[in-house]
Picture 1 (cartoon, rainbow, N blue to C red):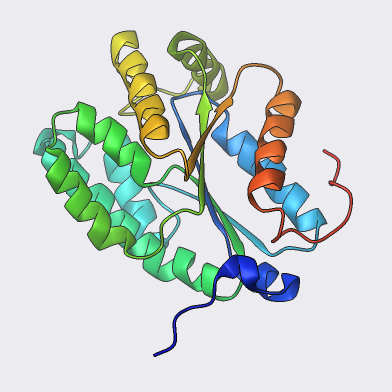
Picture 2: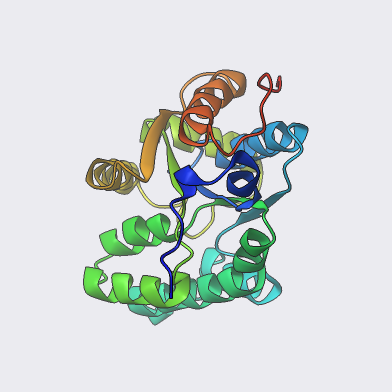
Length: 235
């Protein structure tokens, strides 16, 4: 079987036809959902097909698991069981939504993915070998082309999250103490340091528009050959 062609050697039309998988990670209140909405609009303005999704969730079965996880119903089963549930949701999400979208050439933007499991369940004491084994099972070959970690001080992120949810109760993970959220921030930054080819840290401090411009600079630099020619779409 002949080797796969080097994507950088393909003509622009062929490179552009390949779907791209971008994940946004970070602590509570970092603004991931807002930035996905803005980024989706900018990519669609260039004529690209875009699918925006989230984890846990993104498919009917995964959304059902999401409710069990974020409501705290699964907490009593222990961190290993929660990790398995995250993996089950991710496997269904990848198989039913992410993989088909990428196959038809769409750009997929996902609010959280496997890095969140590494951070949240890893800090809960789950063995990293188990986490990685479940990740390989759930993700397979569909690893992100780019992961953006939206970095913000934990205290500020929690303040933003409290404003966002209003009178609603904090979810299973938002309710944890400040020290845990700070440790999660450090863990995300450690992933970025370990995998610089995939992961870029973007400061989430400032207005949504300012953060969106930082993100777009990364997108243009990383996917220059895959983006249609022309001026950057405005916010």
